[in-house]
Image: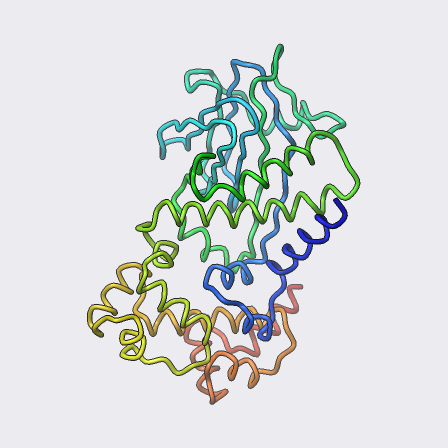
Length: 333
């Protein structure tokens, strides 16, 4: 278990540490987004329930997940989705922050979920709800992101993501769920380190499985699965400082200039060069907030030979100069 803890801790560090230099070593857009989100994950208490049961949870921030260890349950987002059934081995991701419910049957009157979790958690970090045989067992977690960057993730996901244990891309999730099962049966030394890192692994693999099962997903995440636009995004992210031209990108992915622009804008929501500029400024903003690189170094790293041009572009996008942004960000810290 010590080796596993070291491995998962390393993965966690890779997902949460960012600098201009570390950005250059990243190889795909999804990793880039994670590097900027500063993912903070919390694995919640294990939940065990005797039927019938139902819990309602109020609005929340960012993203939640649930993995089913035993039994069946239904999940729905109030006023948004119909009840969907989850079985042992399945996962779900809740992304829109609206109130939601879990239940052994959609017709059961729900209890206040937060109150049940806080009132019935034991010394072993297990919440036991109801009387009789505990037929439903699950674990869940919360992912919180850097406030400046959270839109990158939240805007590209449907409100409820379901991943079946039978999915061809669920093997890594099955392994993570077994580890979570072992970690939540009783309290162990080092549990917090493993729980946080495993939760991050769960999030990445849910996104991978969702992307594989829904290659035509709307938005930026769906664009990654598009053979041509996804290839263009990877090229842009791998060489962020390169002076890309639309014609060059279109040629590399085998499309005409007009078709490429139309397809890119349809999937990503922005024209190619505007996306490139926004991504460059996003990287620069994070480097200004968290690193010690000079303005000229940051400008060069994101493709600007002129610090003046970089500063004017940054101010046009964020409403203040890079130096003022850095000063205010550090004063807040």
